[in-house]
Length: 106
Figure 1 (cartoon, rainbow, N blue to C red):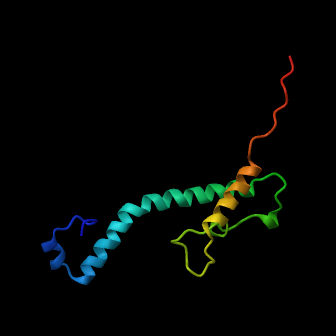
Figure 2 (figure 1 turned 180 degrees about the vertical axis):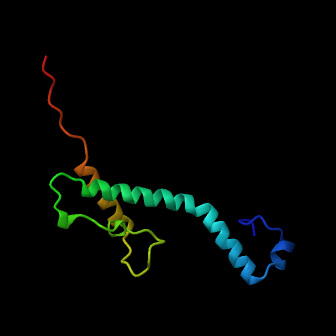
């Protein structure tokens, strides 16, 4: 009730279908911006991964969901653990990490 800002009287007047749609609307309003940012970051990670120097075409990721999965992805995919996601991000960071720069010559 608190999440939707409903008074107890309003809550008790809702039908189960109305309550379901109210929760669904709340979730869409409050979770979609986060989901959009996460999907964008996953797409950027795929672009970085695919654009690595020397990456062969057969090794490129075509579907961003194959890089790492989020909770809202289809349940038929194997869900990655947090540790697997961290390792993937670390691997991308190592590929694009700081490079040794040549000393400037005067």
